[in-house]
Image (cartoon, rainbow, N blue to C red; front, side, top):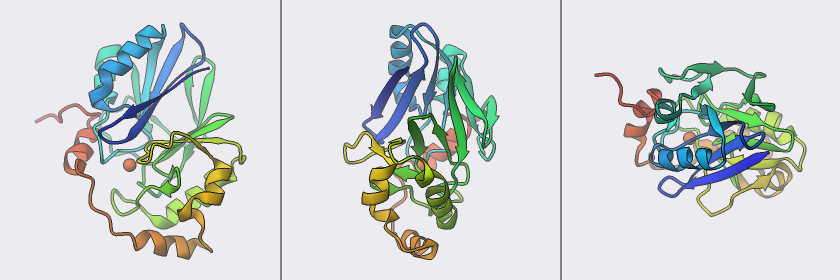
Length: 230
Ligand SMILES: [Fe+2]
């Protein structure tokens, strides 16, 4: 497998390029608009053909490169069936697969950070978007976020994966690049709660500023990062 973790310094976003083999199909998870040239160059350098660009959810802190990548490479653009995006070419749902050649990522619906949050699972790793972060979890106070749903996505879905499963989130603000399910179970402070109500209270008690780019990013991302039609 070809696997590249790419970092956007401005928003501390991780994007992931995956392919089964050199010369084959590639897919890109959570690409950032400003880095489009980097992705297109890397895909070319690795002799890949980008077939799919996908967002785990509508991001509030950066503008997606889905539309720009579709324009540059003719790739499909995908988000989950719950998305309010008006421009994606594919809407996937729980239990379906994202594919690049024989590479198959299973789609898990993991709402809570937003109601359109999904995770993508390979046998040895999971891409958790903003549902499960390294030593953190995504905020649940906007975009139809819901702490109770997030608790269920975490405790009833993601934390039931094998402990050695690698965790690749959509962001990290502390320079951590990867974790495991077992490590997060033990050391993630948000997960050390007695029960669902304790988690809800913890999340609802957070007072967080809105992301700097929220008012720009959310409407832009509903149109795949391209300007909405006037
Ligand atoms: Fe997010």
